[in-house]
Amino acid sequence: MEKTHEETYRELNEKFGVAWTCDTPKLVGVTLNELAEKIKEDEHMNNIPLRSWDQLATHFMVVNPGHGLSLGEAVCMQKQAARDLVSMEVFNETHTG
Image (cartoon, rainbow, N blue to C red):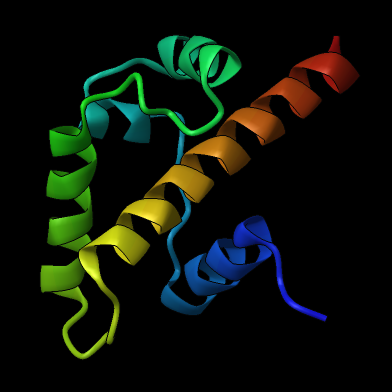
């Protein structure tokens, strides 16, 4: 069975240790709350400038030489990490009060 887009990039994030924290959205110019709203509007986050994603992914690629990833794959990894953070935050808010 073929992996989904989400599974593929979640696995790559695990492999390379990519995980977003509450402060990471600042790296693409938004707050955590703004990120959550942008994901509600567009799950692909095309409402955040591609240049922001490209810069973040390029930084990842520079500090992880020999990764074998394209810029597009590195962007997809970051976007999946962003979605995972928002999902985790929503889950925590729902289950902690």
